[in-house]
Image (cartoon, rainbow, N blue to C red; front, side, top):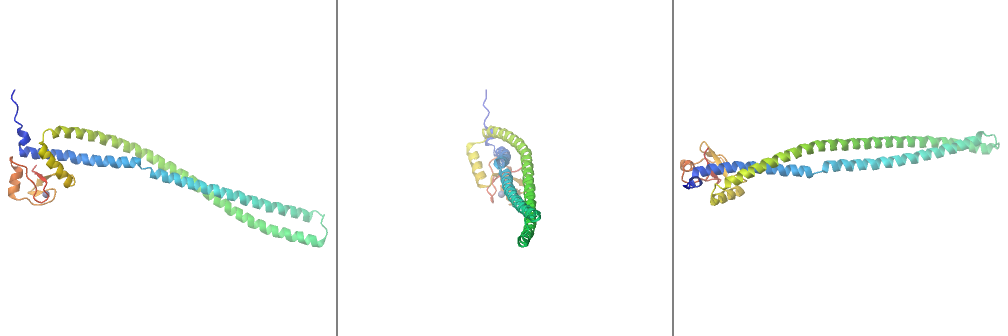
Length: 245
Ligand SMILES: [Zn+2]
């Protein structure tokens, strides 16, 4: 059996086409890898839920504090009310007959009534504050539930995308490996060097006599060379390998 000469390995215009195809694969791989990294970062980032949890915890503490203040205010009001009740009972019991004592009791009852009004006002304010604190807590609970719900939906979508991207990347990796066997090692090294130096793009297409990567016009000599079968041609400005579609 005759061995085929490795002509397509060393046919430069074919080589330029192969490198162009390889570039297409690598560009898609780069994009997929970036998207995979972004999705992985999104999945690892729990900050939205953590923030909602922290807000809920703070709202709970504030509500507890407000509830404690309300109980204290209620106790104070009750104490004043009880004292007033005792004073009035004494005042109207008929047991105290001394006018001076009665007058003192009367004054005390009036002072206690004023104090009770103050305490009741204060209690009402504390009650409103406690109600507000409870409403804020319920709101924070609702917010956390909403954030968790959104997160679940997002995660399911992100995991789906991640799976698709990983499968697409594996398929491209396989095609790339197959393709590498048809490109001379030296050319491949040159290609990889250019990719590293030129933001991932080693091969530039040519449109209307211009390098598509950097926009530089190409001389007729270079265009001839890019179309020829004898050598790879390079853009004189950005140094990329040229491919004429
Ligand atoms: Zn160029």
